[in-house]
Length: 404
Ligand code: PMT
Image 1 (cartoon, rainbow, N blue to C red):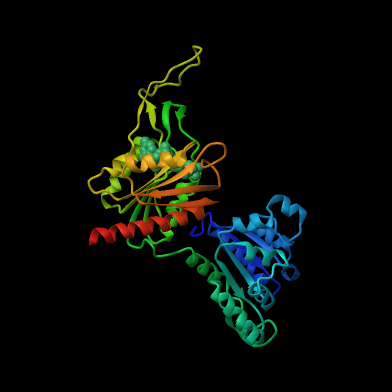
Image 2 (cartoon, protein in one colour):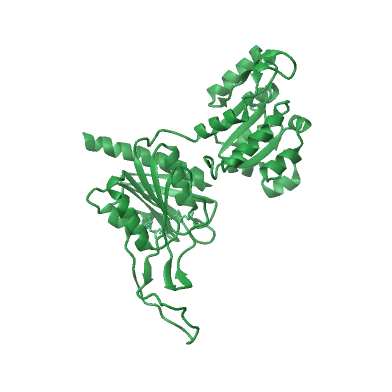
């Protein structure tokens, strides 16, 4: 199952014999759909070559902090921003001590310090080193800061001793990574998300559409699923794999999208409209390919249904979240849409000139009656998770107000 689809995982490999297990970890993470970027310490490279990890991850492996080529490509700060999660496996006693003391004297420790994402450590060391007071103190410091310690397991060790300090098996680490992306913020709710563009036919070979790739909507659907919701994703034509554990309904036109949304609406608690629905369609779709004859042609267009406005006006209105794609006056235009369509929330983004549409990153300004939040430039996955947090807060607040 692609339970980690589109997740960006930075795997730190430090110098322990368990580094050989990390090669299998990369394969398993990629099987689940994750993108994996390996960063090795010098010690790690002594056990397994970077080439092995490069072949398994499909990406060059980074090892040096001051590497001119790497800095010219994805510098260490960009790498820290790229990751959704960092896992260090194996994490030696030395790496654990350096992280506990905030050192930044190699690439891996610098990344861990510069990143604002969950940090998971899978310790691997001799049983006595694990039991040492210094290691216990370092672990306690890291746990206090929110670092998650995976294991270690008990058993026979490479050095011939027996006790705690074996790195967990890759299958266990993968499961803990999967759990890390899950919350129960929206357990028991049913959420319908729309995504992608719609296509409005002109003739059998041409259509009117837009640059939406579907990434934003797919990320929102995934984040809602991870937050425990039952999710239906209605999407126009995109080149993305549907997320696991989400009911996927592909459509082509605005009218088809509207029909599918209204098929499900009766049982929906939250509606999130991330689709870039074409506002107009052709009054008449030509039965045959239109010939190149005159100097110009005219197409008569008519308005498509405004799905978001219709959902918001529905007698059993779900908590309704719109998006606003604006090229100018983003805040003002989003506020107008929030009020005119009587939405519970709107997520506004600047689009055009490489922003919003068909990009990996985005920035959102989220508005709701009486409040707002700016979600700065982040990957669409991270933004979607932050947006789902805001939606969950407002949804539960609205429900508890209505109950009183
Ligand atoms: O798909 P990506 O490449 O990742 O790009 C993401 C995105 C830019 C498409 C996304 O972040 C976004 O902004 N989606 C909304 C695009 C849009 O149509 O915005 P709008 O301001 O034109 O429409 C306002 C709202 O009304 C939107 O929630 C839209 O889904 C909805 N709408 C619009 C027209 C229509 N006929 N029916 C609708 O439901």
